Amino acid sequence: MLKTLSSLIPEIRKSIQCIPADEGIAQCQAEGGVLIDVREPAEFTQKSANNAINIPRGVLEMKALELYPDASQPIYIHCATGARASLAAEQLVRLGYQNVWAITCKLDDVFQVSYTKRNKESIKIQ
Image (cartoon, rainbow, N blue to C red; front, side, top):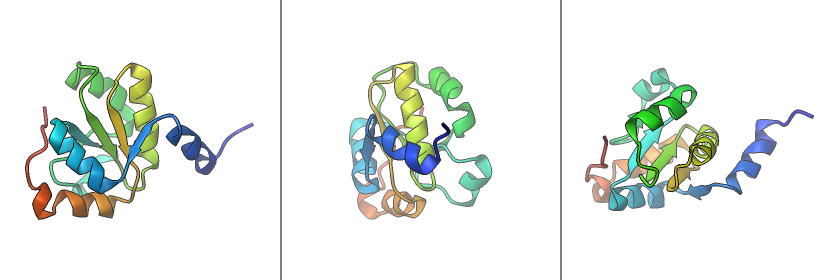
């Protein structure tokens, strides 16, 4: 039987680390993590969070292994709604990454928090 995304995403979120935007951005900065936006390049160009890098969901597994060979690298993933971020986080955990977080909220929340005064410090981007 096929599952809908609306039934699959809650299941996935039970098996991954999820975090709201304010905590995720602060934790990412404190840990020297990387903030990855898994939306498509055209979406990223229109609006993106401060210091986020764009690695589209379709190539994430290949690019992550190339760019972040350390399994303990803190990785924070976001998208427009949290759905693609959850799917992406699940895949990175399956690859062996140990410190992956899905920011599970709307893009506007991630965008706003990433540009607040207290979060102006750069997030480590490799």
